[in-house]
Image 1 (spheres, helix red, strand yellow):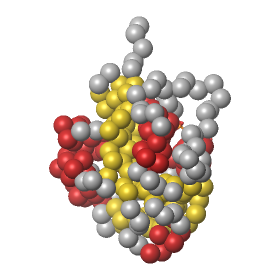
Image 2: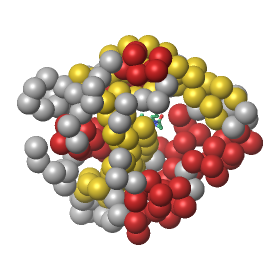
Image 3: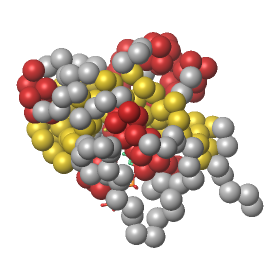
Length: 203
Ligand SMILES: CC(C)(COP(=O)(O)OP(=O)(O)OC[C@H]1O[C@@H](n2cnc3c(N)ncnc32)[C@H](O)[C@@H]1OP(=O)(O)O)[C@@H](O)C(=O)NCCC(=O)NCCS
């Protein structure tokens, strides 16, 4: 049986539809148990539709990265360059210039496979290339799998914030990874894990 080929890199406008599909399949996984389906639907329609991805892909302050196996998108990440609008979040983040890792989602069948680590490597490289002093993110306080992944990738908790999903306000941790000059540290390799094949740009 032939091996699948993983390629990670910037997405294009033509990916908007497929990114919306992956987002619809993966966003509910990041919500705490008991989140109302109507609230998830409202968030998907408002923030993660194909139309919204078309806007994100055309926004000069955002970088959308796709991970594709044999041409099929199996995960994506999005970076947002700029200081957080909320001063309390900006203070907790404490990075200038700041880059937010505003999304990192992988299809459930590909969790634990190295796809997320490859997306993270690419995200760190792009954040450093964009001039970030580091990178930060928000993660739901119940999403322990993602928190462990981020901790292994070098992030540490630096605060809390809320995140609106439809009519509900969820509690997030803020996590941050400060870059040491001249570039981003790579995530620590997991013992015995398969290193995903390349495709992400070199530093
Ligand atoms: C978050 C995500 C990108 C991480 O990728 P992944 O391939 O699952 O990550 P890994 O399997 O390499 O690592 C996950 C960690 O969680 C652990 N884990 C596995 N299953 C778990 C579970 N059910 N509960 C808690 N932790 C779990 C793993 O052991 C690993 O921890 P370790 O590094 O201490 O060994 C991926 O799970 C995902 O897309 N989740 C759904 C969307 C999401 O939550 N995105 C993040 C939004 S902030």
